[in-house]
Length: 528
RNA sequence: GUCCUUAUAGCUCAGCUGGAUAGAGCACUUGAUUCCUAAUCAAGAGGUCGUGAGUUCGAAUCUCGCUGAGGACACCA
Picture 1 (tube, chains in turn cyan, yellow):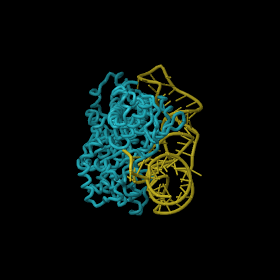
Picture 2: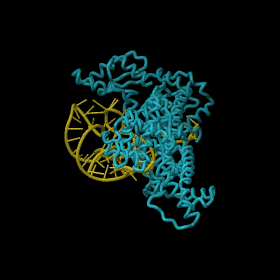
Picture 3: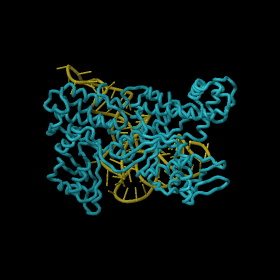
Picture 4: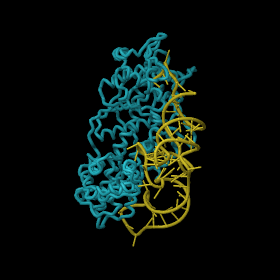
């Protein structure tokens, strides 16, 4: 719809212009402040210029009227134009708001260590990533998703050690001297108990078994993470194991060396990331020959770029921001275009419970499980609330407040609108077939504006996806629902002269609500 | 100390690449149901957009300083 409008205006104005939405729908559907820009050049007042430009739009096929006000030019779409778009959408619902793009995108997100269940902080990135994926795919991007599994290194070893010690304490009942850092939390004890059932309690007698426990537990945790994700409707196309990548280290390292950005010092191998305005150079191979975490990421990104996507998106927690430069440096040193990598940082979630702050740290063990919140609040509410906020703002929410599933939860409001539409159709005894060919004309302003708002979904999606700002979509859905509820209260439908016309508009509203919700992983309710 | 993010109504937040009288929801006050679901709607009240400068026809939006908040500054991941 927006494209047609831009095209129609371009045709008559023959110059660049900004197309925006007026503050108030009563002013118009679209507007441009072009007259302000031209004022200086033409040395005339914006008001006069706007008046003159309006005249160019006489006999337009898509605008009902074009008016000027205080220098703005406001465009009102005509019913025929809106009707055409609505008919098209309703007759081909599955394709509504779809389009085609050629860009291929590799989206990596969550990638939480398989050392414990997902906590509420992970949920933010998970929901953002999954929703971006759904929307991107709908808009026609060739987009794939991956989860990078850190199944090597110290953290996994620490997981095994933690379980081993927990087993000694809780199963063998011996005194244990805990190291400074280890994984706490009840799940560690649970794992120890499960391990004793599976392997016999003797497994906790010999330190040699720590590695075995690590591998076993990490697989268990990955399964748990997958099930946590499935609970909120997330499924990855691919899981990439860090460990399995190390066989390709030589190849990656050889490529990296070609850049002359590696060097050895103190028996360690470094990359010169300071050449990429990093604070310091970074170690990639330790003195004892073990690769650092960055080495894994170098292989992984080499692997990613070898698969030749047009664009790469990584969603990381904001605590990783310092890591961006060194990864980008490494990608550059590998001979790839690091600008193709976009890192989205999901800011921390501050969780409150009864106004007391929760500190979330896996290692400390006092963290809120994502699965607990999902159980209390429901996947739909969690998804909607998380997406309602820009991903770069700190998110505060109180678990207790979240439990109050009352009308303050916008997802109820939107579902209610959708359910109402469904019920009106039922009561009317009519189907889409009956109303899809109805011509929408002689509508009151409220009906026109409701229809117009419903038809905005495609441009909202494009905008939200391009800017990676999905709160634009949630805002839109709330707004459309509000317009609908207002209209519903002011107009009777069944048995009225305009029944069929209104039903067609409602069908369009329902389609937009349903499609929009679906793209953020929420199934619209037909009944409350 | 350096870097990232952030500051808008009592609370939680929108406000698109600068543009019309700064908007929602919750909470508060008042009203609407012989009628398709009142889980709704209408009206009211509530703001010197953290602060000080700058850029210009025009700033919540852009630039700089200051202040507050959260986070990161590993050979951990």
